[in-house]
Structure formats: structure tokens, C-alpha cells
Length: 117
Image (cartoon, rainbow, N blue to C red; front, side):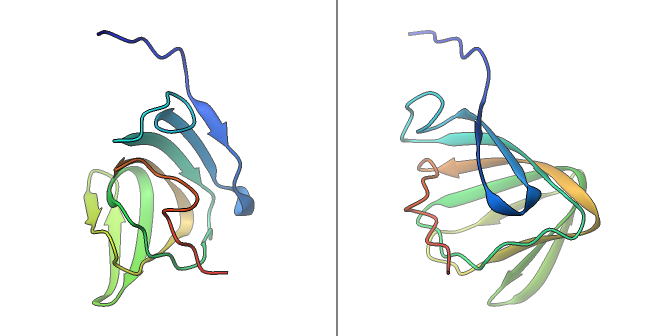
């Protein structure tokens, strides 16, 4: 079956970051995968999380900084980061902000990201 998805759904999040989900639970009803376009402003950060999914982050512009048990990894435009389920991570950006694509297997949900309060 071929499906055409007309456009993304914007998912509201605090802190000035935008999430536009193209494929996933919210926009297309897919539970196996989510694909979202993200834009994070300069100096953005979010609470630590321990997702129940694998996440592939393809950085298009700027730098995404990821804190994890092994230290801190900076991922710049043209690079990709892969995080595994159950790994505690915390995302942030530098002074230039960042634009990236996130692919999650299975699909992202607010419950499965396990963000700290």
C-alpha cells in the first residue's frame, strides 16, 4: 500500500524547540517508526531522558551536544548520532542552535522518552 502524507504535525514542546513529525504516532499513526524535523534555538537544552527506543539523529545545521554515561559527544552538521534504548542522555545546543532529523524505532511517544522532571 502506498500512502502519501501531506505534511507534518507540529508537536508542542517547551523551551523554543520545534518538532514537526512527518511519520509517527501523532501524524501518520505509525507505531513502528517516527521521523521528525527538529529546530532547536541557540543555547537550548532539555531534561535528561532514558528513551525506550533507538534514536538516529542526523544533524543538518549547527551542533547537537549529547551528555551520556561515557561523557559528552558533539554532533555537527553532516554527522549522525545513534543512541540505544535504556541509555540516559541529555540533549542541548551551542550558541548557533541546531536543525536535525530524528528517526526513532519504535516510534517516539511522550511516555516512552522517559524524561526526568
